[in-house]
Length: 528
Image (cartoon, rainbow, N blue to C red; front, side):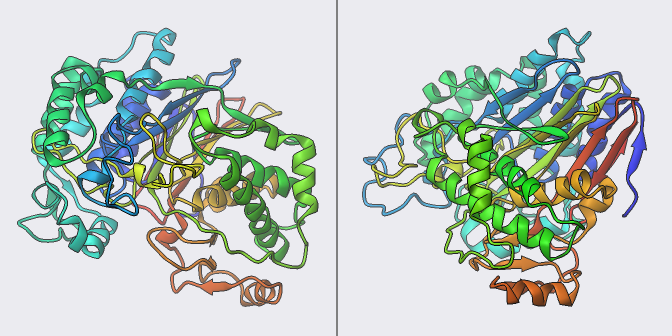
């Protein structure tokens, strides 16, 4: 799909078409951008269980015309019992199973906090309306996607050892095939409970008691007090000013600073044309500079050793830019992290916009599905180190490092853009590809998303550390990158899941809304 969608009354972009439709339908009922996003977030937690769930985390960037952007950190901290004694005998935190389920799931509290932001935007729609599509899909079943089939089969041996996984996410004991109907009746009942009792029930009600009891019985360090103590927080977003726009992203514990730094550096070395050597080499080298600083500074917000906003100063950006060789690649020994996530965006008829990301970290997270509630729990806490002296060392109450980072741009000419992607280490790189093509090189939005992409490092469980390219890049460009010292691998796919599932929405000052979704996903851009 190479044509940007255009409308005037609103749009929702998501990596699954049913989530996009759920958000669009809320807009059609007079709901606002935040309400549409809650509907989409609940729906995608049902229809894309390999990517996210109610037991995961989320981050929001919210734009209201004439006001400063609002950021919400809905990242859950490590359990009160998550310490060295709990993991005695382990050299690292187990990647799957109950001991991997060690951080609070923050995303539902994030929905709740976002809805308070919209409290003065008009009469709110009831939760029963916002969650209706998600409940119906969980009750009646959803058609399994190809990516869910593939990832279930790939990781079945380990995931099937996690309590509740096989009962909830296999069909008749087998890997579900693309197009099979997957019903999740326990999850439907949980969503119905949230719709009637309120979202706070997830943390301080009967649902919290049920989930805490199940997690304790299964062997997780999470307890009821961890639920009761948790609330999502509004935080001050990071920002960087470019010549024609101001970009916003999330602070620690996310890698938002890296996403902003890549584009700020690239603006100073900007290529004349998109998708050639200067464009790719420039962004890849900017990525290396940003990732090295990210890994030196980003951790739990209370432990960040220096101001992340300071890393985005003109002086620091200039210094990092000066380190880049325009014709030679910096050797790259960096150790990246995988991740499985979804990004979604909404814009309503008033120009209010949301950039939102929700994740359970690895595909299917910990693999643990709670027996009573049917909630799948994340394994985000495995990004902690058991070395107490490490920057990201485990301790009760600390927040884990997050690859999640939704992006928002406000252009000087009045346009607002929300954009983002899933894909762990690939998130800042894909954001840079999409934004640079659209904003610097003036490509149409959908073409900016669809055009071939690259990834430095690994994602989706891959172990190789090289520069991966989709096979639609010109052979002469590939040769030039190799000649410059890049360790290039050309994938055998024109549209690879490795490159993430991106999307974007642009609201113009005259009211026009442009939307684009990623052909690499099962998604859509549903407009009103």
